[in-house]
Length: 249
Image 1: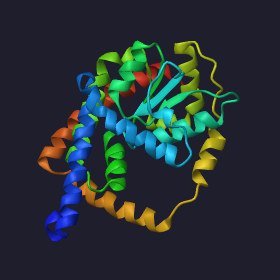
Image 2: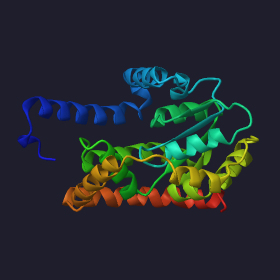
Image 3: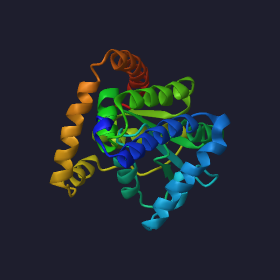
Image 4: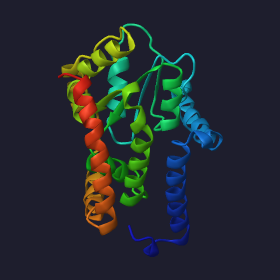
């Protein structure tokens, strides 16, 4: 996206959004910056409440029974939605925080955590096609920062890749139950995928995102992004190896 061919107001809006994204990525992963992350939490809670949803899902509390989180564009929504739909009793699930700091808080409180990771190209294209103002470089740096922060704690949560999450969520929940001594109901994966495939889609939005994805894919070939992508892929392989050891399809 060439900002120099846009109106001044649009340029300022894009720059502001880019800064906000990168700033959020930093304050969401550094415990020492917890106070600076508060406005983001409050804003997310406000948005949830405004559409009649439970705003407490955006914050780890003593009532939280399970945390489902991961970098944006990694099937967080799929996992959360279908996990909740398949429970026969209410479960307090904190989700979509995209925050290593909150995950670490959950670990300290001995709360069950399901961490989702997607291979970097898929995650970055999903994120930047939805929020086109975010550059591929920004997204890669945020992805690396997110999972690097959590790397020393891999033994304290269940890791699920994108493929495991979307194709074997029943086995993922089974692994969560075993590790954390829980009895969450398993997910009907066939029904979950059928519901996902039949969800309402906006053809214009689908076409728009497809075009943006191609532009963003082209950005991946720059020298800087190639190096960042290599770092991200190394991280992914480490997490994927852990996932394969604990989740048995």
